[in-house]
Amino acid sequence: DAQDPERLVQCPYDKHHQIRARRFPYHLVKCRKSHPKEAKQLATCPFNARHLVPHQHLGDHIVTCTDKGFVEQDIMSQSCGSQREAVSTWQAPPCDEDWETELQEQSESLFIW
View 1 (cartoon, rainbow, N blue to C red):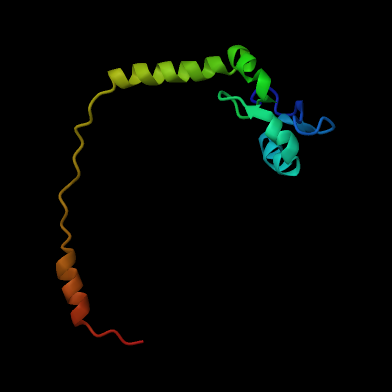
View 2: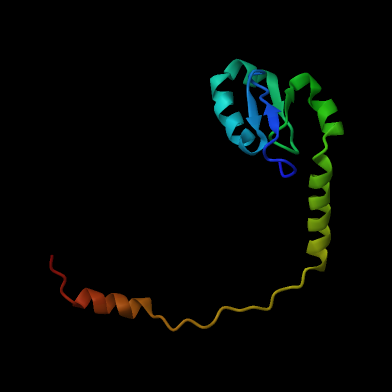
């Protein structure tokens, strides 16, 4: 959590787990493996992978998710930015290497271990 990384967050897999917000994503990965039964009952929010909700409540969560606005802003800025983006005129410099000649020179020299 960018607002307060020391804030305690409750684990969706085990209600007795209280984890600091900065460690929460790592905890979710580990705890999911330890609680496969609970993991099957939870769905991941498409806007924030730290949001795990019961499958039957996912639709409601998507409508009210606070992170949806951030994703929509990113999409809008990317689509607007791509329209205004200038076309690059950069060209690679000419290559002075001749790999075939180098290969012939190397094969002519004797290599001994």
